Amino acid sequence: MDNGTKKWGFQANKGINSTASISVRGVINRLAENLNKEDKREVIPLAHGDPSAFPCFRTTLVADEAIFDAVRSAKNNHYAPTVGLLPARRAAADYLNRDLPYKLSPDDVFLTLGCIQAIEIAVTVLAAIPGANVLLPRPGFPYYEARAAHCCLDVRHFDLLPEKGWEVDLEAVEALADENTVAMVIINPGNPCGSVYSYQHLEKVAETARKLGIMVISDEVYGHLTFGSTPFVPMGVFASTVPVLTLGSISKRWIVPGWRMGWLVTNDPNGILQDSGIVASIKDYLNISSGPPTFIQAAVPQIIENTKDGFFSKINNILGEAADICYGKIQDIPCIICPHKPEGSMFVMVKLNLTLLEGIDDDVDFCLKLAKEESVMVLPGIAVGMKNWLRITFAIEPSALEVGFERLKVFCQRHAKQ
Image (cartoon, rainbow, N blue to C red; front, side, top):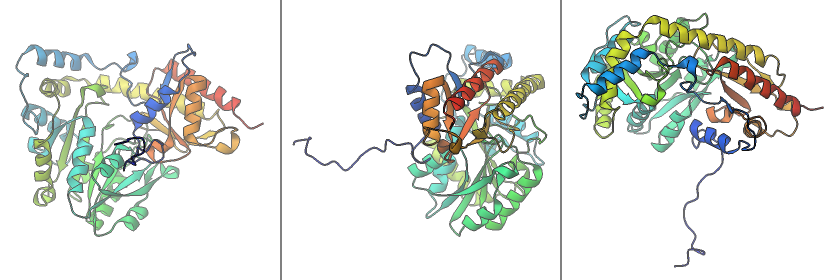
């Protein structure tokens, strides 16, 4: 057969054009490929969500020692149960119970390979419901849509409102939902927005979901990483109103994303998720997938129980100072506008004003040229569902953050319309 003339029935999509076909890592890799190899300056990474390489964000020694102890014991070289080691599940339940008006049991906790696998499980389980659709936030974390596309699960998007601190547009949620809608996703604290939802807003989310007869999937991987005036409230507080799947991990709060230690939790005091078969489906999925390494699971109780509040306060203070620097520097750059100062997570969303720039087509073009000309990496908004916006990470060394914004300002001045 002549392969040169044969017409094949497949062709890869090579463009960055929809959140269903992209990932944050993929976009960052493309930006990295566009860096100028001749530029000897340090690359400033304002596109990532992993500050672990920076000395000021080093994890607590408690976590290191817990891993050492788990490995040296030689008791954790075996396969773990598919739902996770019981002591680790108990420790995670106790940790989450600190903020809840009822008590989770270890049976409510399923250990996962980071929060990413928790997303995979939640989406895959819902995709098995015939005709189901889920409601996703825009902007949001693109892995939800990518995984839904992989599972052939229909998704619909509700907007987050920048002028209201990126709150959920609950009227849009009600308009989008139909008899086949099974869940809505919220991310709190917000990635990519840096928002933190108030108790009152989450209560309204719960009431809306109850009215629609849908569950809430609450992505709380940045839980407690807050530094503004609004305290973190877990969605599970409202589980008596509406069933909640909580997704979380130790990745962000302990600054150990590479350890891939997460959880999926059923906040279900009324037994709705149990009775509907969702819990059984979660267990079925875990039976055919891999979990976190056993020694890392074994370290979880020691990590959670022995970490002092001072460590968490230090990290939040650093993030708060970095957010102040970030927000202040943005005010000095006319072509980017920040509608809401971040109060949590590690990110801020800014709107790109292309009318003030010359030779810049869109957010992707902006970020590719910024990487090439200034060795600064910023995530284009299309990666999180918002064309001609940017997501900027401020979780890096403060001195590097200052340098990054100086280069960003120079870049914008270079491309400013005369």
